Amino acid sequence: MQDTLVPIYKRVKTLLKAYEGGLTPKFDLDSKYDLWSVKDIEIDGRKRKEVYFAGLIIQSSYVGFYFMPIYADTSLKDVFGKELLALLKGKSCFHIKKLDATLEKQIAHALKKGYALYKERGWV
Image 1: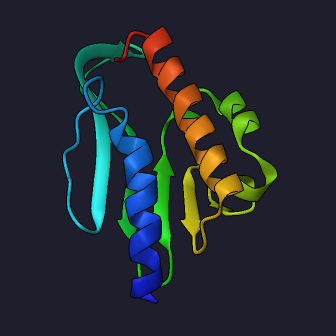
Image 2 (image 1 turned 120 degrees about the vertical axis):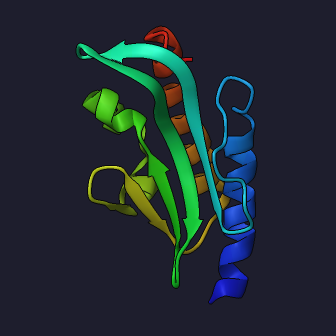
């Protein structure tokens, strides 16, 4: 199963890496990657030095795609296409077992909208 997950991980990682510069990875490994806004900000009256944006991890039977902007604005759920939404487990984690062009496009769209939200809020 791992052999089929590595190409999925690499492809989605490429989509995420496009946001480096504004965002910073803490982990950039062969099986774990994430992006953070590293900036002194205040969210709901609490000072923070960083905010998690998105991440990937290869699990035993899927690639976990974590999308944190959904916590900042739950209406962002509307940006998920039905194919991506079908993979949602919980509030912000998607279990990806197969990746096609439609799903890839939906992930790219969600990342674009999430990044725009972070920018709008001054988090990037």
